[in-house]
Image (cartoon, rainbow, N blue to C red):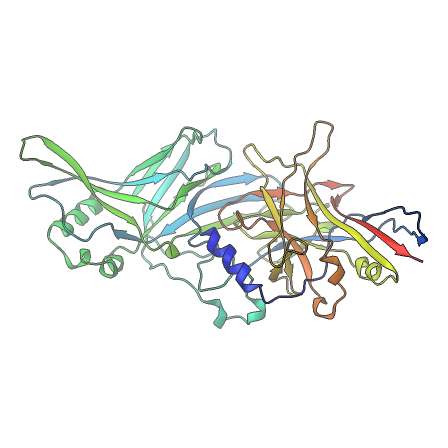
Length: 455
């Protein structure tokens, strides 16, 4: 679950006592001064060269995060994102409670929408979901043996299943459903599955087949399922991770009346339920991101840069002149505020992330730490979305960097940069996308500094 990832990140960084180098965006640095009647010298820096780029992160874990993401959404600027959910299953009970003389009726898969409701994309059109039976067992991957510890991201603390992984499944679906995604009123989806599979499972249970005896035997036989969207779907929807597959049957009771009941197959170990999140950036300025390139400068995309949860896209920022400024003798920084502007809204079909965070990355663009609240120890700083107004002011996020910037010239921070990311509460279990606003083909990311210079 998200809490587990967040706890792991906090624990991992308790040993870190320093922070990293402040980084980039193609926007002028705004620096203001506090006026003072004491004998103080005051100077102004009008602008600094700033750089920004869009980076595709690797190894984003999406297992055990508390929801199933299924669907597809498309944005003209960044392309499409497609989410499918894989999961193991097990019998709710390995006892045979089916009465003698019962007859098989149907096999159905029941999905309940997540609480609170989550969707991303156009919900006005009908959506289609397909259910497939897995032919390959879902397993977690330990990347520590393949890459050095220096390259393992901060949020990978154990063997994981990553957003780009896929496991083999039968090509023919065993069930499909067309539905209207009325998010506010829709509560449950019921997908009719293949009768032949249902009858086989029913017969194996009533004959006490060895494959129905325990979880290990059952999962060796039934490796799990994947639910995927149709290519023409228009929205990604969040469902609870408590999936039920019902083997429905009926029998005549001792009172002579027909009774209908079901034997339930449920989601297995949540560590083996994960969301595969794919993307297609063809015919956009970011077409090469994640394929031939891991980083694209904003100067190559007409000033555009974006952040996307689920796929692991972040915006890297770097302000080289900050190092020289922080070396200025007699300077005392009183306030440092990083402001990120966006035209995205927090509501609507394509909502902006509720919060952003700042990763600290090494020179290989690998997140190794995060920016905390000033003087808080190790409490991760999350910047809340602040709405714009009717006069044209954009929505924004604000970070307090007063403690952080004072360490940028320390030797251990050489080569490190900052990366803007979706907040940790939605980084792994959503597909929200944030387009950073721009002005004159320059991203609107600004560092405001209030400082005093002693004569």
